[in-house]
Length: 132
Image 1 (cartoon, rainbow, N blue to C red):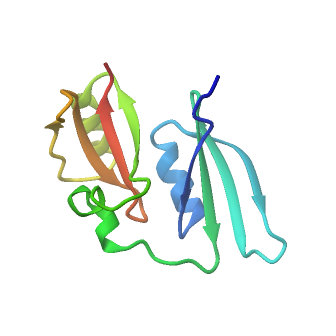
Image 2 (cartoon, rainbow, N blue to C red):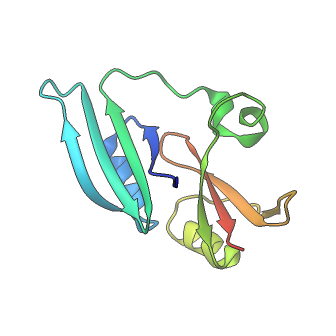
């Protein structure tokens, strides 16, 4: 009856964020902006996953504690979103070759899956996790 419709993030530079997420295969399909330019909204899609990106002219910075899992996970609220891959080693190479992140530490999670985290241009956590 239910499915995940979309994930929403807020960013400081909408064009920079769109270009970042396009590297992972997201394609832009809808956009809107306020007449006074106070907010822009872009929708990107990757297969059946929609990423809604908000860009407010007046924004509040992401707290430093939200940029790393060790200090973010214990805080209540939404934590991150994950991009699934069939081969975690190939994903690591892709991220390094595209200058997205230099130091990647692949870990095995408590539930047995291999994963690593990166930050988007605004420091938002994005998990790269091997599919089942």
